[in-house]
Length: 307
Image (cartoon, rainbow, N blue to C red; front, side, top):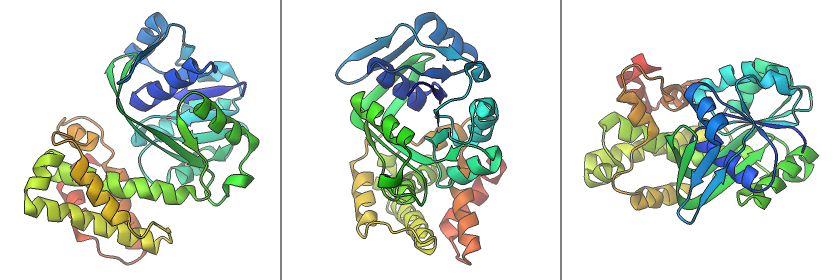
């Protein structure tokens, strides 16, 4: 692949950039402000539980239009930054450019198609615990690093050659990348967990451990999860029969002090949040099916001024 842009140098974009660069692949990273300056000066660093990887030279810019038409664009912004990112990279897109979002929510491909009118809109999700320690320095905790990406409604075997090539690049770089036959299913599998956990910890302003210790709060979490699963069924998503049990087990195994990024963002009065991609989206989908989702609506009502 000759032309690849990664938008966003946060925990996800920074992680993927270092892994691909360390694997010997070229890309252009889009960043702004202090992050752009730091990367242009010092490159990118990724600290993992096993090693420290430093990319001394990274092509990093805030002017992606100068790099021409791309084969693929991976968007690693917060969910609320998707439209802005699409506007920024629109000069780099033609009808064959793959646009792959790695962000929260279940309908990013629809937002992409609506905004750009060009390119091939995909869905994608990533499982990795990574964060920015300071501009240009990323920390990964744990060993999970799975990526799923695909075109909704298109089976893996029918994927474009460019997507298959990107998947191979990621795998060759140490990232466990897959093109599933049903990408929407994978998006919902992740969303059932993230959406319920993020909202419960935010609603009560507690860690996951504190949530587990309080029966009332724990039942609230499970009620959120049940409502999300109900909406998924109405959406026609074929989720695993044991997904609820697996999510509960995952909740129980999370570190006591874990908090969602949504809960942290909500504690900062002026910070934009992804609430619209959680309770906002869930309630909207439920209304379309005539469903009542009182627990998700309670979260939405509590934080309605932060949408």
